Every structure is written in C-alpha cells, then in structure tokens.
Image (cartoon, rainbow, N blue to C red; front, top):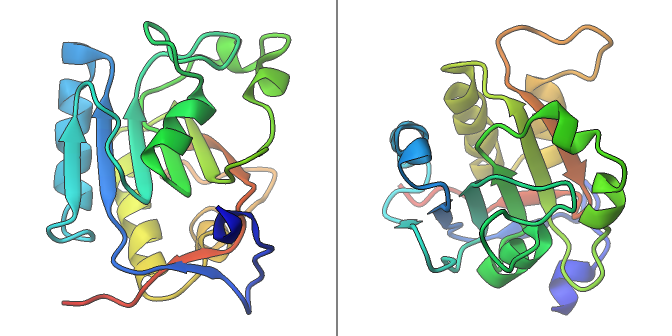
Length: 189
C-alpha cells in the first residue's frame, strides 16, 4: 500500500477518516477483563466503529491485541508474527494491550525479530505495565487528541513527555513510531 509507506510529517500527516478500532483477544479468559475495560474506555472515541474478535483478525485502522509474545516476536499459539497480525488487520496503529514481560523484550534477538517495516508500516506500542486505570485514560486521551487532528507523536509527547523521569500516572510502554505522523479525521459527532 503506497499510502502506508509515504513519508509523513507534522504538516503532511497520514489522516485516517472514520478510524475503526479492533480488539483481538488471543489469550482467552486471561484477557477478558482487560478487553472489557479497554472497550469501555475507548468505545466513545470510536462511536459505532469497534470490532471484537477472539479468532479472526479484524480489519481496522487501530488494533488492540491481547496476546503473549515469544522471544522471536511471534504471537504465542499462532502462526503469526506480531507484524503479520498488524498487516492482516490493515492497522497503521497497533497496541499490544496485554503486558509483555521485560525478559521477552530484552531477549537477544527480540528487536531484530520484530524487524522493521518492509511492506507495512505502523506505529506499534508494546505494553510492559498497564499501570491500572492509567492505561485506559492515557489511550482515550491520545486517541481523542488524534481525533481532533493532532498527530500521534505530538499527542504522545504531550501526554508522556520524554524525560528521564516519567510520570507515575501513565502506562509503561515502548512505542515504535515508524509510520510517523498519523491523525484521525475530525469527529463526526
């Protein structure tokens, strides 16, 4: 997809009109409560454009994935790599919403196995610590700002300034902004 590979800037963001949210639970009951909380927190931002699945990868612009990852950046229990799931969804923003243990992220080869965007770029967030209710508040505000036309990197640094000491009211995440400046189209409320 040529549009997904174009250079984005703050002045020329990739704008997704009527963005849709997909919630994909590949962990079963272990993630049911997390998914329910996230759906309640985020559904108002994506009024009527939310899909939930436990098997099939939903087609969506924004994917929240509940899964276990292994040290080769594969989704445990499936044939998919993390990138493969994101591409199958058609998502340009993806959040691994279940906590990924630090030992997985720090494992030799995890970063290289995650790889870089070869044929599908996306801003990918990997969660290490949801930090309770901070997770839902943070992402609801991030996506609300994106709905108002602020790009993801700019909204991110507003909510989580990149300082040596991070605020204790945000989730612990690693964010790969490889697709760069993405915004959502204006709200259609």
